[in-house]
Length: 312
Image (cartoon, rainbow, N blue to C red; front, top):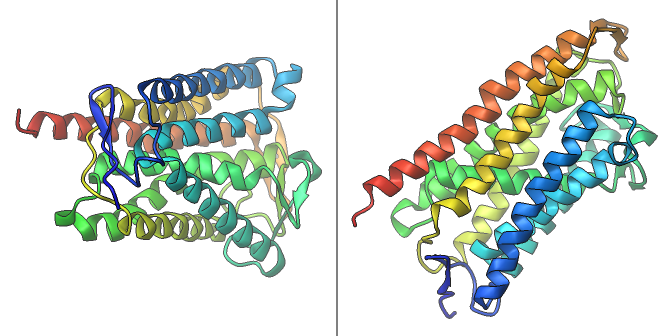
């Protein structure tokens, strides 16, 4: 296998072969433009969704937001991993995500018994089509943060990358679901758990399932990369910070949503328990700050520390 040694704004993408990565400076620059554009579109759509929920664009929120995450993951990831490798991550996330969700809806494992409502759109078997791409977008961002925190693959750090990194990434992404699921299940009714649950209508099994599902995705990708990595990558700081900024914005949306929402209503979960919508949003804001934004800050600090300690 030939080493992929493509210079990109002073850094090098080193996964895969030369034919798999953006081969020219122009192609790499286009990927950079598209990844930044995806962040901006995500931000605009989220603002509309929060402040103008009746806007036609906001009505397509799940599809537009998922598309921006997929575009970011593919274009940002192609610079570092190459097109083939990043598409493999998409395939892994899509397949494992859909299998685990279909399995859980049918058997209760790993998330618990639940159903997706028509609000989520057309389905692939029992799961909305949008779910698989959504898993990819979220998992790619979190995997990038994890590489910043744990460190990039290298022969001297093989166990860290193969074992520790998937666990760290799974913990981070489960923190994100602690924000999303109570709102989606209890306020928006995008999915409904058979018997509700103690966490604002969401059962503990859901978060165990999210960890298992995410860990399986990350572990498979880590094992795949272990067979293809050529050297440790060296990429410019701005490239990595894009993922940190997007994840921080995704966490910040919950405090903003709380501040923008006036009043509170009583909502009932499928188990018959009553919850106040304001409390659910307040919980999402707290968790968003102390899990998602903290993870984004940790990734930036770890990357800066690594750059400072690097010789030269």
